[in-house]
Structure formats: C-alpha cells, structure tokens
Length: 212
Image (cartoon, rainbow, N blue to C red; front, side, top):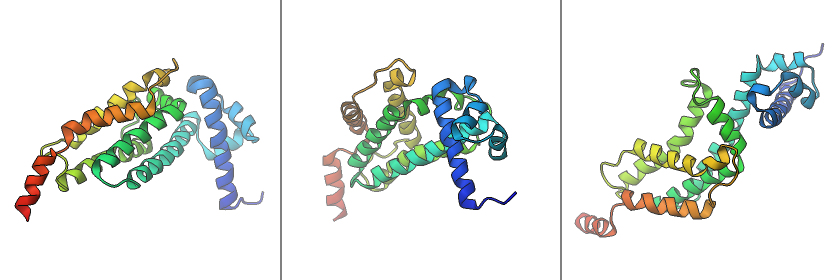
C-alpha cells in the first residue's frame, strides 16, 4: 500500500475531526458512534482507529482544535486594543461571543471533559490554562503600568470574571436557549469590574506628578 504524504494524512485527519465534531454535536458524546463518524468522513471504521485510539480521543481532538482557534482569536482581540480598560473590555466581549457562537462546543467541554479525573495535566487543561492566562497577564501588566490597584490578585480576577461570564451564558450552554445580549453584558461586566481594578485617576495623576 503506498504511503500517504504528510499533507494527505493531515487532510484525512482534519476530515475525520470535522466529521467527529458534527456527530458529537448532533448526538452527544454518550450516543456518538465511531461508525457514524466514519460514514460522514467517507472512510472505514478501521481507518478511524489508525488516527485515533477511540471516541474520547476524537472528542479531545475536536476540542483541542476549538481551543487553538479561540485562543488565537482572544489574543488577537486583546492585542488590537490600546490601554488596559479597552483590552479588558475586548477580552470580555470576545469570550462572551465564543460562549454564544460556539455554545455546543463549550457545553461539550464543560459536561464531558472539565470534571473528568484525567483532565488535569491533559492537553486540553494546558490549552484552557493558556486561554485564561491571557487575562492574568493583562492584569499583571496593568499593575506594572500603575493603572491597576496594588494588591489585586490576578487569579481571583480570572475566577470571578470567567465564572461570571459562564453564569451569564448558562441558559445557552445548558441547552435551554437564550443568553445575554453580548454587547450590553460585556459593557456592564467590564464597567462593574474596572471600578474595582483601576487606580483612581486622581491617584494616577498624583503619582505622575511625584515622578516628574
């Protein structure tokens, strides 16, 4: 049998992941069948197992691709803005858009992966940590620049913000429909948290005068 080129193998793997995503979102993890993935991808069941050892590996490949995509999107959205407050607001709005646009994939991750015993230390765990570290780095940078209050715990900000956003979007994530108006929710949440994070303008002004 002729050996597949690396590009051809990558294309075939991507097609299998595409099919797995469609089947998982249609049927859920418990009811998804490898045979259905194979049929949709136009390959044999046996070929699936040459690329992925089982259904859990297919699920994880779908979610790794999802996380890689949204991580790039989040980093780009934050980098495109200037100033802590604008970057903070961009992060919130981008994440809420992800929760709205990719609710099915977010729900798959929350219900099937995040609470699993094997999750800590996995590739998905590391991607999730990298995703949330965009906010942690932003807060630490704001502290170095003197615009975020001294003594703020970036990890607490992370937990409060991402937990709050997940709660806002839970109706959609739980499959009951609905969800927040993204622009309004992002503006409200950013305003609420920035009030506690930012050094008051008069204090920043006094610091600048002392430094001159």
